[in-house]
Length: 157
Image (cartoon, rainbow, N blue to C red; front, side):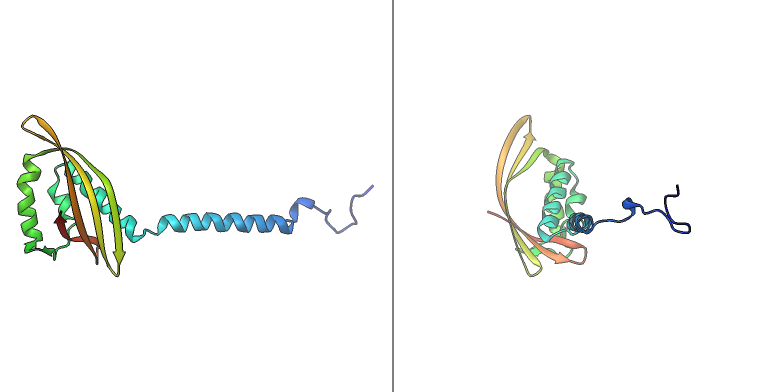
């Protein structure tokens, strides 16, 4: 008893995908694509947060050069240039033993290629055997430069 007419293939049910399965597959593919795209796109706020985290990590390593990579070359704020900032910060970075840097409060306002970050920073240092926590309120100004977001000013409050 032959299963099919001679010259034709037998019907395979699994070879045909129902319409509902195509729709489900399309929805799953769209969801996967949107997650991948979302992770590839870095928002301005995320870039600024990453910059602050790099600065924190560099402070903990006493790496002034790493900190200065986050500062714009044309930094000029309240008569302080990037070079002055480097010279001013060098003895503090070298002399102090920074044990902890923690961002307690962070508010980021972004507008037209500039950003203002309001920070409450808890810094714990070891100074002559004492561990003293210091709370610093600071406003960090960022500008969107060719290499990304860079610090253009810092104002301690």
